Each structure stands twice: as C-alpha cells, then as structure tokens.
Image (cartoon, rainbow over all chains, first blue to last red; front, side, top):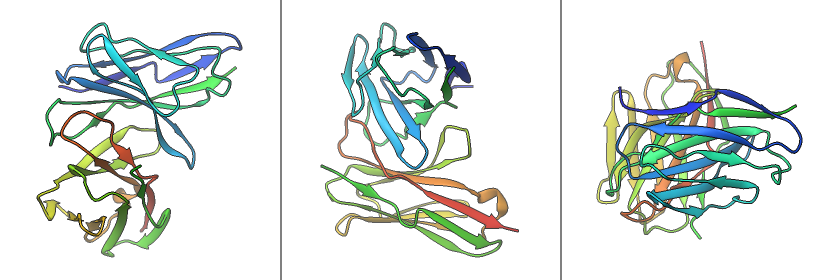
Length: 113
Length: 113
C-alpha cells in the first residue's frame, strides 16, 4: 500500500541532544512538509521541500533542520537550539499538480526527558 | 496573508443529528480547499477536496460546499454517528503549485450515543 511512514512513533530527547525524525513516502510525491502540532495551536509549518535537494523554511524553522537527498525521504532534525521541542510532529506529502489531496503520516510524539 | 478560521472550536451533538462545520478564509483567490479528519494521536486523513471551480463535493454522508466569493466552506455530516467523533480541519491551497496549505485550527466534534 502507498503511504507515508513516520518513525519512531514516540521519541524522547535529553537536554543538549539532537534527534532525527524519519519520514518516508512511496507515493512518488514531489513535495513534502513538516508540521508541528501543539494543543490548541493547530498545525504550524516547520519546513517544506518542493523538489529534491531544495527546501524552504516555514513559519517556525528555528531550532530545526532538514535534508532532501532523495525524493522519498525528508528527515527532520530537532536540534538542541529548539528549547521547547515537546510536541506532535506530522509529515505530509503532495503530488506536484494542482488538484491533488495532501497526505499525512501518523506522526511522531517527541518528549523531553 | 491568508487566514483560515473554523468556528466553533468544539461541538457536541447527539447521535443521529445532521450537523454543519464552518470554515472561512480571508483571501478568496484560492485554488482549492481540502477538509481533513484527525483522530486523537493520529495524522490527518483527507476527506474531500473542492476545486475552486466547484460548488460542492460529496462522499457518503459527507458533503462539502464552497462559496469562494464569500470566503466560506461548510462540511455537512448527515445522520451523525459516535464514530464521527474527531477533529475536523479545513485548509486552503492558494495556487496550483506546491506552496504549503493554510490550515484552520479545527473543530473538535463529539457525537454522543
């Protein structure tokens, strides 16, 4: 079945540690997105990539980094500079032609130890 | 800057009732609008996508309408069931490319048996 796989489902970070969240899609979608979801705040865009080897900052990129070396993969690193990383992280993808729905993974919940 | 608003933030209805969820957006120059469902601790599932040239889309007990000129969309759920309990989000796509969707904060629906 085609879809988006996020791993791990739960992740714990120690102070000063960088952690990487995985996002893989087998939908052959061009664009991929990372969102952060906090209670009562809705979805906030962290980074997005419309093509391999290119990505753009979203609304809350500080303390995060990404790479897009392959079309199927868009990992997100939460760096130690992100002082409040506890949240639910969602990865999404979409085909590069107008009227196509956006698909989401099942999310990774990150907590501070 | 496009803003998407969903009112109310939460709604509780008895089973069997027909209900309407509202979504409004500030800039009517949209390419399409998408409705999503999110269950607790899960990713978003696409329900319906309405193109800017369309007035409505239907899927089973769900009907979504779009009035671009007034900046409004509604999601109608017929004969609601406890399994419909979830958060419903709408998002607008402002162009035919892969610029990020603009999301509302969602309406949390509870259907009481």
